[in-house]
Length: 561
Image 1 (cartoon, one colour):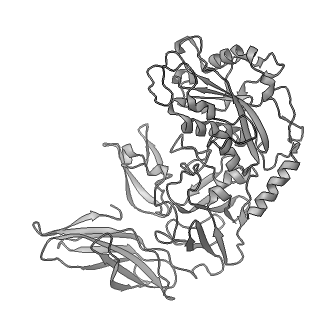
Image 2: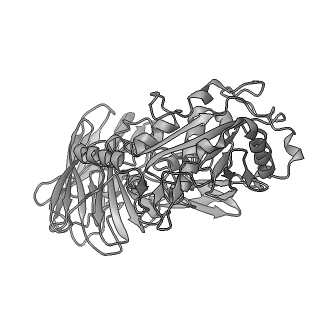
Image 3: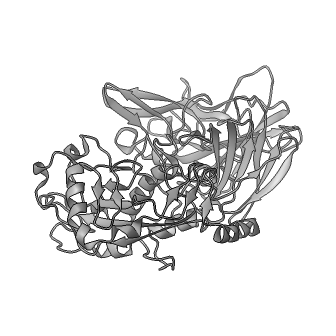
C-alpha cells in the first residue's frame, strides 16, 4: 500500500502547474503549496480573560506563535499547522506562512467598534505599508475550474488570530472562527493585490488563541477546511474528523478517511461485495489505509483501524472504527459512527436537567450522536447533564477482539443499510498495531455470532438475583454460556449452559442462591455459542454483592438501568 502512496507523491511533484477540480479543494487548492500571512491580535480591554499560554500583560507575541507555521517548504519538525496538513495529505498539500513579527493591538477598546469587520480592516490597512501582500497571491483558477499556481491579483489567505473578543463583534454568534473574512470593504494594497472580503475569499478570522498552541492550531485547520470542503459541518462524529459539528464543538482533530479521500489525499481499498474476503489494516491515521464497502453510488461503509499513533488522532478508543456514510461526495456527508457499545434509548429528566441511558435499542442513538433540545436546553452525553463526556468518544467505541468483534445484520449496532445488502464484519486477529478483518457477503453468519444483547441483572421479590438477555437472531445459535468470577482479576468460570430456543425471545437465568454470609462483589457475563461451536465475545459485566445484615443482594453494577 505504501508504494501506491509514494507513486502518487512523485506524480504530484512533476504535475504541479495545473491541478483539476475533481479530488481537490472547493475554494482553495488541496494540492501544492499555499503560503499565508498570520497576524496575532489582542485588545487592550481583554484583561478579564485569564490565560497562562497568552498572558494579557505581554507586550510581544507569545513564544508559541513563532512555531505555529513553517515559513518554507523545508520542515522544522514542529507539530504545527504545516505538519498537520502535510501528514493528513501524505505530502500533497503544504501550508506555509509568515508570522507578522509584532503583536497587533487595535487602536480602540472593543466597545468602539460595530463589528469585527471594522477591526480587521483597521489592522490590515495599518500593516500594508510594511507588508508585501503580493507574497500571498500565488494561485488562480482557470475557466474550467483547474487550480493554476500563478497570481490573479487577489491574495489567497490571511489568518487574523485574536486572543479573544466579545460575541457582539461576531454578530452575537458564539463562533470561534469564520472562513468569511469580514471587512468594511475590499482592500487594494500598496503591492497591487486585493484583500477580498466575504466567504471563502482572502482569509479567516478566529478567536480563542488564549487557549494556546494546540487549540489554536486545530481551530485554524478547521477554518481552512471550509476553504477545502465548503460551508457546513459533519454532525455526530465527535473528534474523529476535521470538519466536526455538533453535538460537540471545537473538537476538530485528525481527518476522517472520508475527508482525505474526498480531497484526493488517500485512496480507499474497495471491498469486493460479491465474495467473502479477508483484509489486514494498519493504523489509519499514519498510513492512510481504509476500507470502503460500496453499497451504491450514495451509500457506503468505511472501516478504519485507529491505533492513535499520530498526535492528531483524538479517538476515544483503539481498534476498528466503522462509519455508515450517506452522500459521501457532498461537503457535509451524513456519517454515523457505529459505536461498538451499541445504540440506546435515552431519557431526559427536565426537572433535574439530566440525561440518562435507559436500555439498548438497535434503532436508537449512540452516546456519541444523541442530541436533543427540550425547553431551549440542549441535551447530549456531556458531563454536566450525563455524568461523563461520552459524546467526545470513550473506550467502548471501537470494535476489537475482546469487547465486541462482530458487526452484522443482527448485532447492535447493526450493518443495516438502505440497499438491504446483508453483510458481516468480524475482527479475527490483532498483531501489534494491525487488525485482520473478515467480510462475509455470501454466507453472512459463517463466522462467530454477535455478542448477546440486553444482558442485565435483576433482583426478584424473593431477594434472589436473575440474569436476563434477549435471544440472538442468528439462525444457528445453540446455547448461551453464563460466566462468573469473584474478583476483577480472576479468570472467568463457566457456571452454566442455557440452551437456545427459537420460541423464546427473552431468557432468564436464576442460578444465584442466597448465601449465609456477606459476599463481596460477584461478577457475571454472558456469551453465545453457535452450532459450529463458534463463541461470541462476552457481554458487558454485571455485578452484585450480598449484605448479610439486611439479608439481600445489592446490585453494584448494571449493564444498563
